Length: 159
Image (cartoon, rainbow, N blue to C red; front, side, top):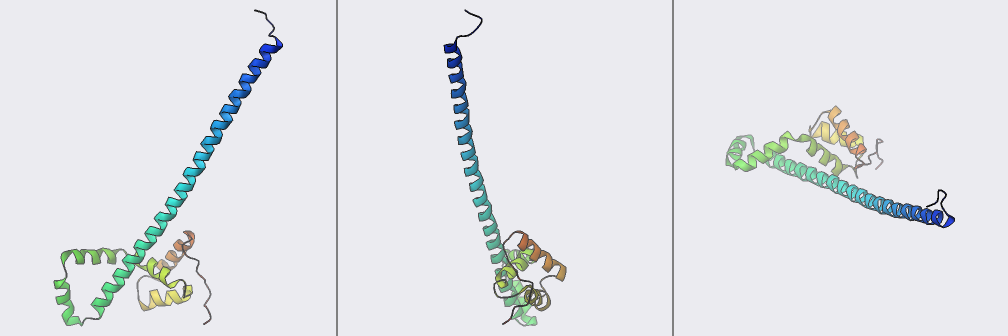
């Protein structure tokens, strides 16, 4: 064996190195493709979770509103008998929804967003229905804006 490699040996080693680099490049390209696919799937799942959470909040809010309408339409004397006739499960469900006012208010905001401005929604939700305080209402609006679930206008709309 000689101390100085021949041109043929150098070329052979160089080809091996080039092949190794090509294999590594292909491997990294496959990994990046898999990573991008996973990120895309995660983004879709996150959007689905946000949509489902909004649907749940809307349903809870609608149920709460319906439960309140049925209790409001009954006279005060018969309201006690109405509460006694409700099943234990229904009472617990109504109590749970009452304790979770945030989802109710957010559902109401989402329902009113297409046809009302923020100021009109404030009048309806805070002043008329008394569902939350002014500060809470505006926190919910900001939360919806940050989640990009709602694009609300801050000006009064002309009719």
